[in-house]
Image 1 (cartoon, rainbow, N blue to C red):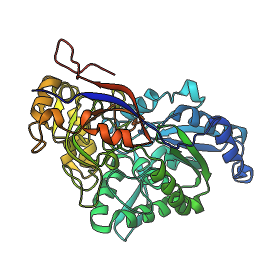
Image 2 (cartoon, rainbow, N blue to C red):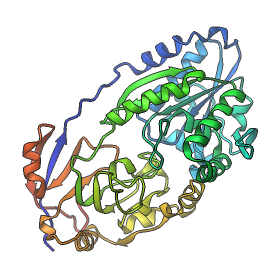
Image 3 (cartoon, rainbow, N blue to C red):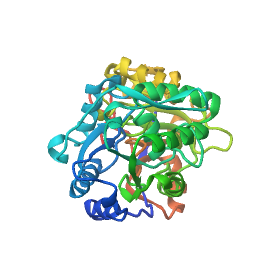
Length: 418
């Protein structure tokens, strides 16, 4: 089968970026004037999640240093629902794989799946909280603010989600995802978040927003009484700064890697246009991608392939690399069992492309609109098929880095890396 010729293109974004990250973290925390709230020797639990936040190790160390300057004794709590196979050891391994180690940050890591019930909301929904964090004098909730992959609202993914899903651990995450079906995401996220703030000695939140190049664009230390207001404001910026595919219509999207460090759904549904339905865009949702082919998993996802059910095709090596138990636990906890469904798969990229391009509609394969991306987080450079040539020429935000050329394969019939 003749495949489309591909050219390398760069997207140009207006992307703000913080220069000195440690100084910014300390400056934001100092502005809260916490000296009257934090006593010498007070213990402080600092959350670290499972998302691949850029500079997370540097940001966490800066928080730890700022807390130590107040006389506190901080420790790190892995806060990530059911990730890491739903085990304390697995969750510690995830944060350490991001460089967040005891040696680098200068404080202990205390990982557990044990929780305590700190309250009830809606008259029947129990509120669970990490056992170690519940025993601390203070809690710092740190997380990235960005559009959620499955829900829409004024508050989506950020500080509130860390209080619910992160610090609720496996048990809390499972309960809240079930409660959301009955009460709605917005209602549960606000109610549980407020209960945690009221009962769990939350000192402040450190909200992080990234730009289109996956770099740190904003950091803010937020007092707990402003979580709702500030998350709303930062979500607007996050949506403005998030990376996107450059075209609204795609016949075939080739994704080199997916994983939990890229997005909670492995591939960001806001990028691939599948936030509402697994295999097509909603009426007013863009981009509209006909078929998705995923080539592999990131090393950082530790075999968790949650979200692979969105794709129509994948390479056999992805299936072989799956930790089925971790994937199923994560998808079941999130009340999204279809996310663990395994797509049609073949042993080589060439065969995957052969099959996928026969199912994109009434279009010759060589003329199909094809995009190839590294993952849904890094979209500054991508490969686009010749069918987009005229659009690329007319777009001031796109520039051609390499002219159209045939797809190249190795001796195993797999695509060559970039």
